[in-house]
Image (cartoon, rainbow, N blue to C red; front, side, top):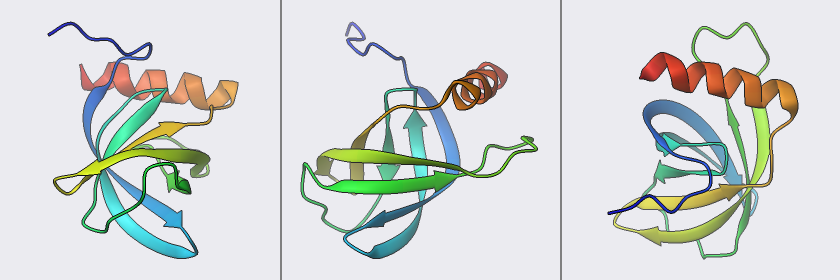
Length: 102
């Protein structure tokens, strides 16, 4: 199947703290790219819900990355989200991290 995403995804196992409707959850990214991610999750979150995510990249001497995301779909214990957009330094750090996984 042809990849249709503008930003490709990379398989990861990276801890993420997400907040939605005032509730905070510690979960794992399954894959991620600059445009979005899949998060292992066992709570039903409605598509269209706005959430905030916070994560720290391995081997990065930086503060955690905070970003707003939108729930796109939720099925089979996985939540699909799109990110609102990273700052330039975060894009650089993420691209460096993605390259280290390949």
